[in-house]
Amino acid sequence: MTDEKFDRFLSDSFKAAELEVNTPISELEQMIAEKITVNKQKKKQKQRRVIQIAAAVILLLGISGAVFFPEPVCALKKQFFQTILNIGKSINISLNSDGNQLQFQNHIADEVAAIQRDIPFKILVPQYIPPGYTLDSVKQSPTDEQICIIISFSAPNAKILFTQTSMPEKFSSSVNVGAGQAKAEKVQIGSVKVT
Image (cartoon, rainbow, N blue to C red; front, side, top):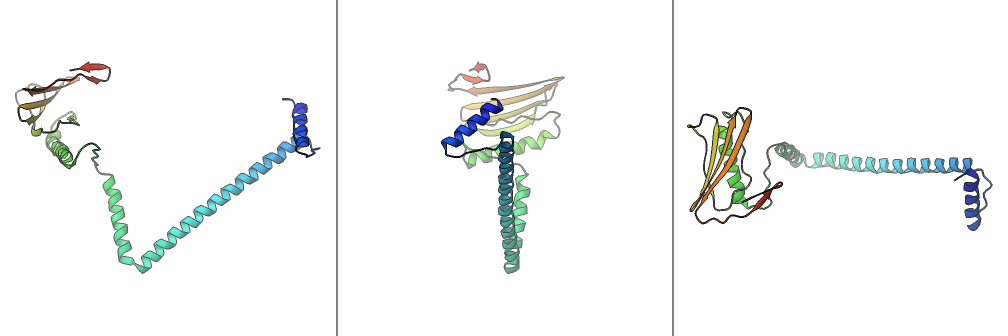
């Protein structure tokens, strides 16, 4: 839009609103830009004041709490820092399991950690084991030429062997399930369907 058309548009708009403008467009644009800048600065100042007041209130509460209740505040501070340190440690969250499943997963992790330092590859741990299975063992196979880790689980009339083998420049893992009356279902893993 040309300056003349824009000037005519503004004049017509202001006349329709019963305002008359004889100021050139460049001055109008400058005035609008200055008003926007002033409003932004005022908004930032208000936000700074709110933050400063909030910080002052929190500081005042902290100081008055420390003066009036020194032992509880010190204990709370110590507990707060301990909680922050604990967050950095391993956290197990299981949304679909109960406490027994979480204990079971921790038991598996402990068993794997016991032999991990002697193994040159990271031992993979199944994230889900069907209910009713217990951990039999996590051990290195003494008969294989390559390093082979066998994690075995058992349930009444069923067994799962999870094996991992390190070969030169390759890695292999397999799952063997022995269940007399098991039902197989097709499951999609990535783009592959397996039974």
